[in-house]
Image (cartoon, rainbow, N blue to C red; front, side, top):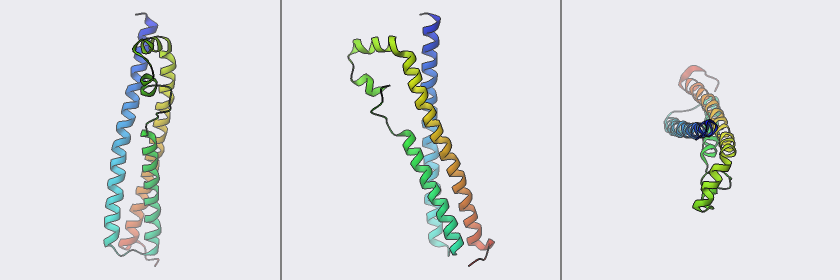
Length: 150
């Protein structure tokens, strides 16, 4: 195996590992967003809320729903893509060997674009989650007497 082939193989493994790490982070954040949403909903049902608390908390919950949507989109399988499982499922064993030998650099480029898209979606979801969480904290302060605008 030449140095170029070793480097391509290492780059391919690195990109696939980064996709796996991003998917793991996404799953953890999705579970966290779900728990915050469920907990907020449970608390909000039992607390008398003022209009400002409802508006602020509602906006916070809406941002959490948007974050969950971004997270789900970033882990959504891409069955129409030309890289990975969909491509391999259409080839014979001999064709897979030839495709890997010929197109490893193209596969790395495609997987890298996929990793960047997933990472970007995760980053946006984290931003939305933090903003939504901050709004929920503000709504809690308003509800428990921090502001009497009602």
